Length: 190
Image 1 (cartoon, helix red, strand yellow):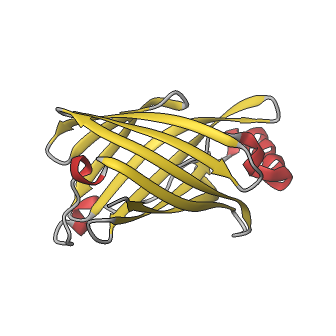
Image 2 (spheres, rainbow, N blue to C red):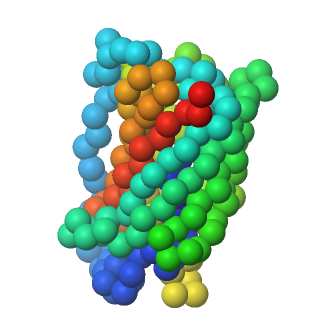
Image 3 (cartoon, rainbow, N blue to C red):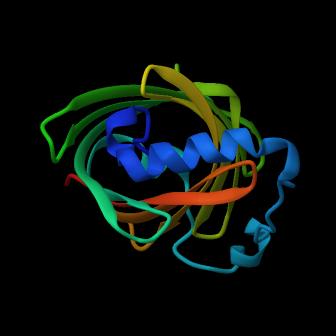
């Protein structure tokens, strides 16, 4: 559930790289190997989305470009609740430059350890798998950049550290090329 839905956090070098990638798309082969979430099946504590994402959660994060330079920092407050197999994450972001942003995720459990998620800027559905202490999301998100909308792929991992703390790392790609990443730490309010 990364915060990246606004273009200004990208910065000029990123926008230039995105334009160059778009122009070269016919020559680029997408592809990236991914770790199987089952590799974390024995890790504790066991992650339950329904248990962790219930109540108010505070988060602190940053976006780094492909060189590792921090482009923007942010805080987020997530108000989360579940009704049966459907969860809602109401997220309010405040960026280091003062921009405010809202995203509302709707999560739905579709099988043992399997979830789908939707939000206004997510293309189709995010596909999620939980195993042990880990959650792996894969999705595409539309992000405005200089008056145009670009679709980026996200490989998003969350790891439960304890009952109150979760760490999140989402790698952003276009045409299979790594463009940056979002790092987020989250803590449930008591």
